Length: 420
Image 1 (cartoon, rainbow, N blue to C red):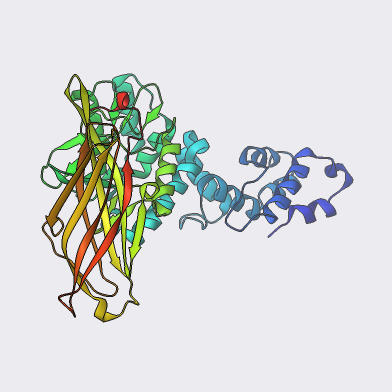
Image 2 (tube, rainbow, N blue to C red; image 1 turned 45 degrees about the vertical axis):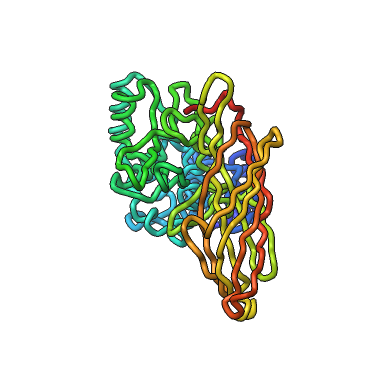
């Protein structure tokens, strides 16, 4: 591999003053200081191509595999040459011919997809397997010309890399949550064809790219949309009950990156191979003896019951775990529950009942049991706390009261922004 620094040291005095060559040396030094998988360089492909036209020696320098590998890594996120290419410069040209219009956003979008794919392979194989291959750029251009609009490049590029999910999927790429009426609802990524159909037939001048899929109902409900203003709003609900996914950005690539970071950093829950968007920021926990109870919650929707007040509906997800190192004689079974529910005005309502969601889970060392439930408040916020009565399996006359931590639920957006 030819080193620009060595070439500069051995070349004539005439070329030592060449700004291109000095820039290349600075780029090489900068690359040397970076980690092997990070190649933010000072010299770009346009300057390399200019240098090739200066002289044979400059062409030899500009054709350095080292420098073109650096450009491929930075612009196209490549760590190895495509099979059909014999050089890194040829590799760069191959991608440039296809994605040159998207070179300013390619690294961001592709890096996010790579990170998301790696995470899905390990944690949600079914979601990974139902991602579609990319849509042809010609199809996107045809849609733009037909509707006299121009979509943001990062949005188009994402669809060129992955054309949403299989229409038959029940595993949503953008997570899900439980509702009282529809059960588990997943947020899938629409393929471009169905997105365009909704744009033309259901939501004029608004391009949806996700759909709410209920396990109990086959029809979808649109959640996220791209407005023709080129501003992206992930929390705007056009139709449906979901409104609390508080990742908002002015560009698709920024929103996509934020969502992926939240996902890979374990901000969301996993449930039977699905992603649940109960945010870690809402989590509280409490340990009684060898049993830990964790709770996360989210605002589902709110509606105007009458002119005097709005009813706020919340869902919460509870996980009960027994320490793997707990003695086996501490194994127990949940018998009953007690809740104290307090709204923002201080009104207290107590609830007692057998089991939880019709179940009587047995807790043994290492066991985990999770369930979801719901509550509602006339006030915008409210809190819950309580306990579970557990019967010892070794000594049936012995009871343990396992505490549930208090958790306060409140809207993450002003009530006036919530859409029913």
